[in-house]
Length: 301
Image (tube, rainbow, N blue to C red; front, side, top):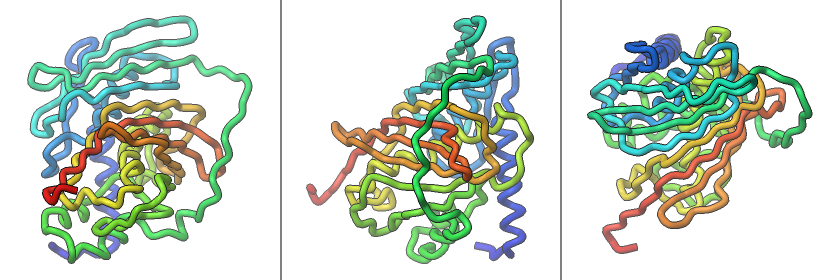
């Protein structure tokens, strides 16, 4: 692997943000039909956050002067990163205050994902929120790349290469778990994250980038109590569904705290919840997800 200076790495990360924005910039091929592409990475399936973000972009392309306040999605089949994804939008309803859209993602002639999203004309009203947890500031924490760099010599070459690639989202975990030999931990984690460069001042784009990022660490939460790593090759995981509620405006290129917990795991599924706060303590989004977690132990654990 070729060594790069810190400046080279920062430049590559900024390029990764531009790549993400391009991936989210869908091609319109008919009135309600859009085409999206996947990044050229050696991964066997499309990252779930990418499909959420692209589907939300497709819905936004059919809505004017309204902001998304909630989305609910199901992952149906693994996405194939080698071919485009078609997003078909159903304009379910255009009301005076709310607009509803349904988006179906298609590959190989089959649904791989569907999403329902609701948009609202901005209004004012009652306000309250849960308090933001008291955690260390992001400047006081190592980033995920530094944590992975420390163990790269213990990783298979393909995994080490995957860990080292430029990423559009910077992540700084407050209470990280050991990647290789994890000990059981409470099903609770706090993660700071942000896009690695400044993003255009479009609320819809910041929502779509954050929807992309919201799938990056959430499923890990329900695995933490069980002391097993996906690097073992014994763990089979996949997002099954994903829901988000947007409460207030925010910027995805400024630090956001993602507080996550998992109240339950059963039936080879884990349930996870997330709250996203600005650095000033404003709760701007809530997330919920259920994921598949199967453990295959050849020793018969």
